[in-house]
Image (tube, rainbow, N blue to C red; front, side, top):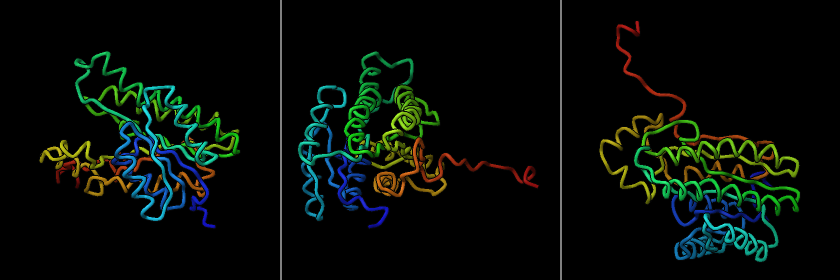
Length: 263
């Protein structure tokens, strides 16, 4: 069997209804995993699960609210009752509210923190207990460019994603004894239904594409290959890493060097 195969594995993907989460769920299923698609909206999840089944895979839909700690336990129990185990957790669910620091309300702060950090933290804690019983597991956190780079008007989101990067390392250290590898994928600018309005602005689109070495924005499926690798036995000695899948954004930037300075 290929070291990239996910045959016999059970994966839980949060925020799977659309965008990056959907792309990852589809790819894990294509590699042989039984995929539990989780998000708040069950309608989108059921359509995704059926699409995976139509393609020859195995999937089920589970509603989950990352801000509800009891819902996390319920979702995990549903997974284990259905498939008998949990091998892979993809912490993709997240939210954002774009506003200057001076306009951030306590309500918005708490909402973003609860979903992006608190929910991820405790779902990982609970999932790792099931993985430890199996003697192995994979946790894949979804970070952001803002895990290591600041952008204006997304300060709370940036705080959560910076914390996700450090939490990934802490989880890798503590869960290593149970043969659980923990890594983070930090996506670049990805075109999804949630970001298409922003990128429809010509000035914004030109800036984003010019800032990326590959000259284009990402598609959700651009994240899927890295997720499949991190979920597979091929990554059994990779842990505690934040992998930027960003088209070269974090590698650097072109600059308008004048001829006089270049000689």
